[in-house]
Length: 472
Image (cartoon, rainbow, N blue to C red; front, side):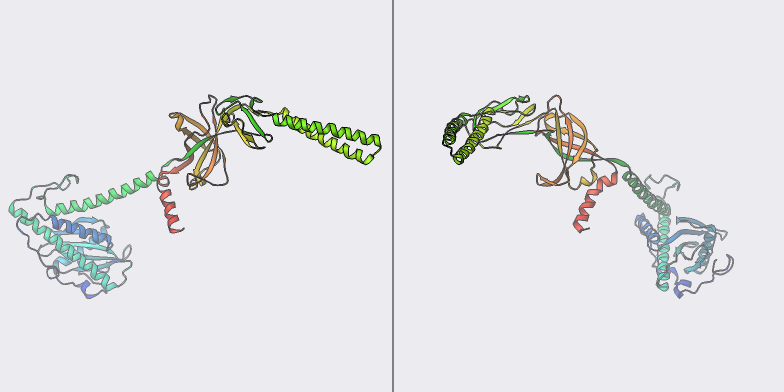
């Protein structure tokens, strides 16, 4: 509902502060500026453009209209920014006509479609021209201050537009203005001699277009950020044998001869080294002599009828025979043999022949190389995104240009420290039928960890770092 009478009637001012219903004449509110010779008005256009933007961004303006009175007394409106309904536009024309008649700022409160505040002010020293601005007034707060600030902004906008009009008139008097088509494409630069009000309209349109560009760029960025993309996790890799056996010294002894070295291919039960049996033979001979004596003493005890001594000698004979059997068994196993077919990974003992060995001492490491295991060091920050069975591409530095496609078969449950970094070790099998790969080779692995949005791929690490920094 409109709080004033129809167009033909006089304006009825609502219960507002005195400055709203009848503000001071604009000529006294804003000092009149006299255009200078040769001024293009570009500064005024920029100031007016900034003022219009402030009206809409800070003061919740809905529409801004420039009104011109024709020779017949009718008003024609030119929307500088925003839009309003036909009914509101009709009321804006009525208030603007009243402002032109009284040379004072006029205002109304409209309640149709929500409470709105309409202000109209005539252009100082420009007969027959005025502007009107429609504001939202849902949350007015301090009413007096709220209405005063918006009335003052409208008067300031009218003064700016009056300056632009006078500068344009001065340019016309000097013959500097050239004809221009207002519908000309906005991207064509407007020369300083273009009519100033046309330049103002273009400047406001440029702001609108810039805003549309910003919104479009933001929307495009959001759309691109939402595109799913393959999430690949890059990790360090080291090759290890899928199966390995360690060959150790079976008993204390002295190494007589080493027959193989690292890199040698060995077959099952192939002799790898021999131990010196001289000491064993000496021990066996000594025990055999003791055994013979114990047998003789036992026979003598039986002949004399000494049963207790005979029993002791029998136990001694059994003990000596056990010792001889043990040493004889060791003498029969002086040859150290390979338990499996494969390649000697470690164990260079050819320069250590003759050294004493202790039982359980590691001599050789043997592994078949037709199938290797890639140990993949997954960073602790990425392990939550990795699961068993994920496809993995492995590239080794020693065979550049060749990749191996496999999948994760195991993830160790406990973290390890490798290269001063906490990692979880995952395993993936690699076929090596051509025996081109060797244990200990390094490379990189790329784990396909599923689809993620581009935005997540770009910003999840900074986001996690920020969360860790602020202690979330």
